[in-house]
Image 1 (cartoon, rainbow, N blue to C red):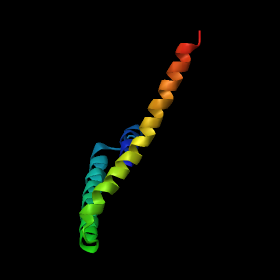
Image 2: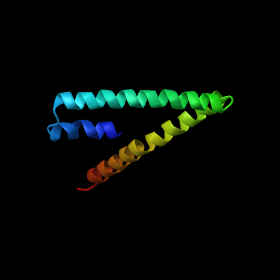
Image 3: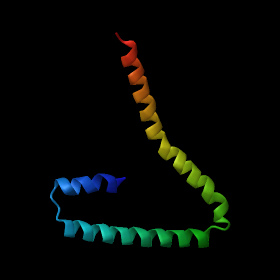
Image 4: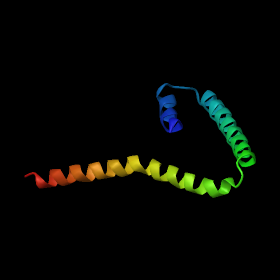
Length: 86
């Protein structure tokens, strides 16, 4: 989510493309390395982690879909109110 906001902000602040690309690559490598290490640590410390992982991922996906669903519902209600008013 931060990267979604950071990219346009970097453009608005006139961050040079070379500096922006350098930090994007460094951040991507660091993120990938951290995720691989976290996965390795989780896999080696929790027995049968695959039994727990899919329900946790499903829960995270469901929770992440709540804000867009709420906004969609809010916008549909607002549109319905606008259509009802003369």
